[in-house]
Length: 210
Image (cartoon, rainbow, N blue to C red):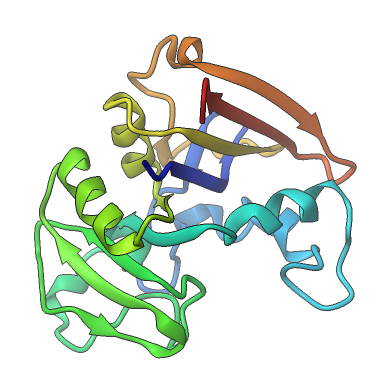
C-alpha cells in the first residue's frame, strides 16, 4: 500500500504551525514567512541556493508522490468559500502537480490548474479522504500537506507513515499548534533529529516498516 507522508512541515519552538490572524493577504497570519525562510535559501527553491542539509530534506517533497491532501486553511483564507472565483492561494501553476484533495465543509466543483494540479473538494473523514487520494495516486504515495489541524487529525487517526517536522528557532506565542492532544505519539515511530547550520532542526518520525 502507498504511504502517507508529511514533508517540510515547519513549526515554531512553541509548536505553532501557523500564526494567528490568517487572511487573504496573510496566508500564515502574524507568522508571515518566518516559518519558511530556511527553505527559501535552498537550491530546490532557487537556482544558486544552498545544497546543504536543508536542501537535502526539502528535495524529498516531490519524489514518489501521486496525490496530496490539504486543509481548507492551506488552500485558501477565512471566507474563501464565499468567493466563487477564488482558485486558491498558490497561483495559476501550483507547486503540487498532482490531484489535490482539499478538506472542507464547503465543497465546490473541481478546479483544473496549470502544471498538472487539479483541486478536488471533500467533506470527509481522514480515513475516507486517504482512501480517495490513494485511488487517485495510482500506487504512489500521498502527501499530507497541512495545515497543522489536518496533520494533527491524521496523526491522531494513526494514518501517517512518515512525518518530517522542521523546528524553526522562533517563538510565535499564538496561532494553531500541531501537538495538542497527541501525547506519546512518538512511541509509534522511530525518531531522528538533524541540526542544520541555518538554525532549524529536522525531526523525522518513521513508522516501522514504512
